[in-house]
Length: 83
Image 1 (cartoon, rainbow, N blue to C red):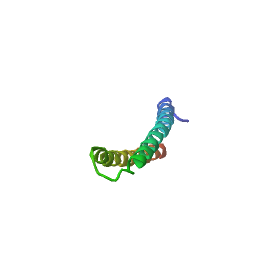
Image 2: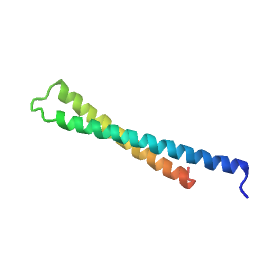
Image 3: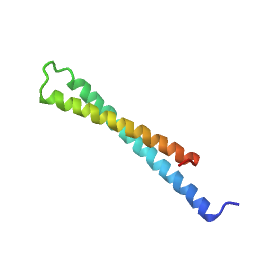
Image 4: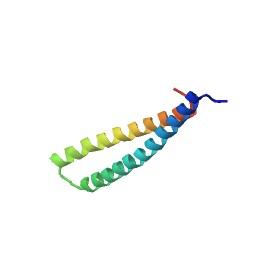
């Protein structure tokens, strides 16, 4: 029979998982909107301050995407009981 501590740990992981999934959806939506905006702005032919800012934003969006993937892997590992 699981102890009270075991049950609390399982419930904590479930709550973390639910919150992270909800936040993940918001982050993915934000990244998608930002990517669409960057795509529209990329139509500029002459590179100016906006183009440079767009390239920097692309890098940031890419980094955020990698962070989201890593967080998802960590959540899955935590749910499976891995460290």
